[in-house]
Image 1 (cartoon, rainbow, N blue to C red):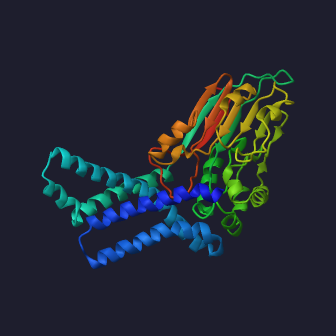
Image 2 (tube, rainbow, N blue to C red; image 1 turned 30 degrees about the vertical axis):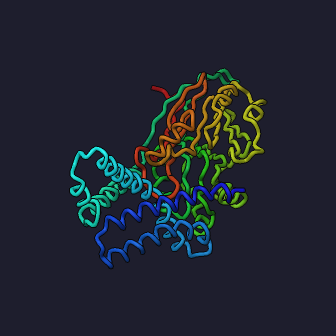
Image 3 (cartoon, rainbow, N blue to C red; image 1 turned 90 degrees about the horizontal axis):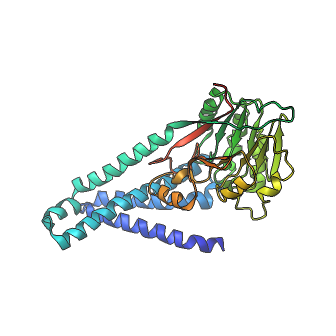
Length: 380
């Protein structure tokens, strides 16, 4: 059944590639070396994605990472190549009807012309370089909240600093060195607790085990600990293997369960929405002491009205990546009540992170990679 769902996507992918490379072939002057290079590049770019996902785990990690990065990067480059070439062709078609410029002048720079080809490829290359640099710049998002709850001893909930992250997608694309750079950012904030809203792992647990990523997580300094919920990619990479890794990393994984922290507040971790057997949020919080703050980790930000109805004080989600790049961000904006940022519903605070990492090619265009520093009841 799942294979059938992917068939239209694969066909669309091949159709888009055919369109882009056919137009590049037409734009290129008839030069043997140039066309051999184009065919070679097309073969590597298109097939790398399938090589990575079908046989990546059977290859040396370095080789699998190479194919993964090439294949997934090309997915995003393809989007912009398609857009640029489509609008170029649309401009040419419109000109044929309206004749606002001589047809031979337009053809001179769009067919059999190295300059026209170079300008088109150069524009896409510069756009992707900017997207790569934007991804490398991790944005610190400060969020100050007030939760006016009285504890059992009649004292107000004390100040708390949370560093919240989501969507690390560690694996063939994001390595241990990059993870440790993020850990330095987290430790610099001196958090009381670190919360991870799912998708710690990308598509395979193998590179994390062979690279001993678990030891890196133990460098995080958070007196109250590190807590996480399941994301859909924890299931994609194998639920049992993912759980084993997360436990070895010293992360408290909450699967439809609740942790009471220092008798002060609760952290509720939900199963990912892809697990159809997950419990309703109302059941998870039914027996909690509502005088204490309740923080929920739920990877996918759906049904936020149920979070409000459950008297949750703060929910932290991820999953959307805010689309990673425009125009995909327009799709996520339409799909979710909020695909990125802060939302207040009644007394419930909700933050949907665009993720500190991302899936596949390392490009951020119109979006950001971030970590969220949440200060609750901070003294001014």
